[in-house]
Amino acid sequence: MKNNHRPGVSLRLNAQRFTLALCTQRLIDMAPSPRGIAYAELEARASALPHVARGTSYGTPALKVRTTLMARLKEDGLTLVLRASWEDRERLMVLQPKIYFLTDHYRGHLYVLVNLDRMAASDIDGALRMAWWEAASPALRKQHPELTR
Image (cartoon, rainbow, N blue to C red; front, top):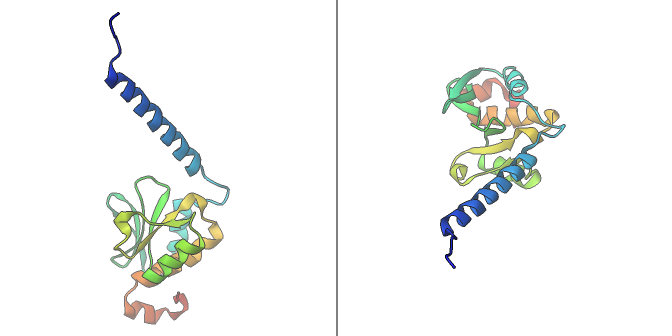
């Protein structure tokens, strides 16, 4: 009896099933919660801070304090890259790990990643003030002590 089994086909089908399962789980995990905040709302709130301007960074919408990056939307449209001090970043990730996180790429940089779909609108103002403070120059901080983190 001839064996019609083709090993490569079986492996490809299993890999496709595995990939489909991962994608499905990711979509479930990324489903917006009632607490989520849209980037447009975040941008509107940030524009109330002094010297914040809209721009782009790596082809995505960004917010800058003068010319320094304060925040940018990642390519997935659900994650925000937010300026933060080392201490603030660690504190936020410990206190709210479902909202604040890191990837290996950002470990050596003064940024934290934010799940916008899990962040409460009431929490965004404090996070934006923190990012503003970190992105602002010392002279600008001196002019606006009310925005201290």
